[in-house]
Image (cartoon, rainbow, N blue to C red; front, side):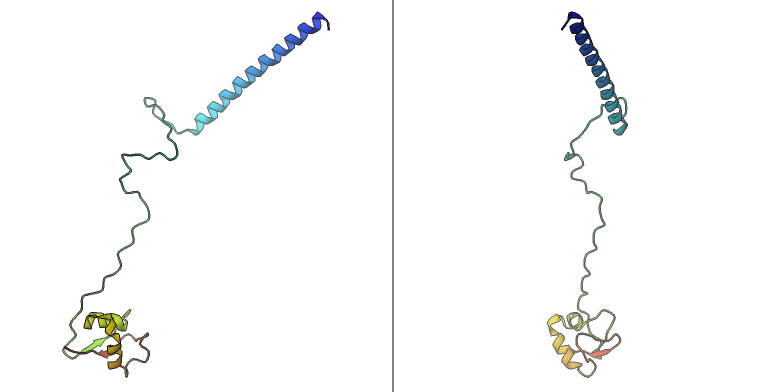
Length: 139
C-alpha cells in the first residue's frame, strides 16, 4: 500500500467520522425539540418539575377525590305505628306481611300471626295485593 493510499484512507475515515458527528448532533437536537413539544407549557419563571407516576402530593392526599356520587343510605323502616281503633290496615305498594308486622306489631317475625288472622283475604302470603284491608290484632 502506497503512502498516497494510506493518506486517502485516513482522510476518508476522518471525513466519514466528521459527517457522522454532524448527523448525530442534528438528530439529537430534533429529538429534544420533539420531546419539548410534547411537554406541557410552563411559566418561564418556574422550573419544570417532572414527577414520577406514583407521586403522592402530601398537601392534597387527605382531600376527598372526585368520583361517583355516594350511594344514599338504605331506607330506614318507620317506627311501629299504632293501628287504628278498628284494628285494620290497608296494604300499600311495596308492603309485605313481615314489614306490616314490624310496623304494627313491633316484630317482623309475627307475620305468620298476621297471615293466620287474614287467611280469607290473603291467598299467597308472599304476594299480597295493594288495597287489601287486613285485620290486625289490637292491644
